Image (cartoon, rainbow, N blue to C red; front, side, top):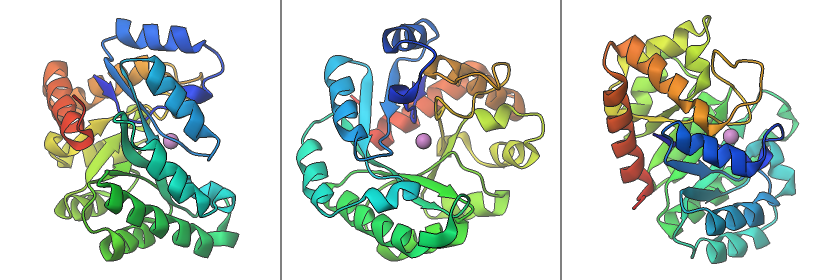
Length: 252
Ligand code: NI
């Protein structure tokens, strides 16, 4: 399995060594670590240099848009010389927490889309309560980057619109929640060819560990739930989502 979105640098309950060892023991052979804050960039580089099976993304999260400055463009360009930087992320729009700087969020999002296009890297999208603006901005500005809707949270209709545009959906622990009816419907309706697995650790911990801190090893509960919903085998979910992730992120 591949955990395509995992902030292992933010996990507090377990040591990094334990997290990585536990992932391996549970069949997770690759982990991709996104950046949220500019300070994450150096942490991500350190992690990917140290651990064979860890890959990284560079980008500034929409809620951190105020920490953006244009010198980060050169920094990201330079750091992405590293072959294990496999995407720009996580970037996007978040209208859930604070709506007072939506315009700034859009501006920083657009700058990072252009950067991803220039670097020919995929884009890992954070979209919370901002489906329409996220989609419209991608439509207008994204030229050539593969798009992944990380922690997809829209309706079946929105999922279908995204698929039509060639986007992939990142599915995580939320799908295991009993009350996540909409999410389960999305997984049922959307072809496995368009789905990749993720944890978003340390957040959004799947059942049966909901309420505790999340880690990459738990991505198997996401795969199990998808298999159950689609009435297919666990192996098939792993095989197809692995192939998808390897293709999107060009993981060798
Ligand atoms: Ni995240």
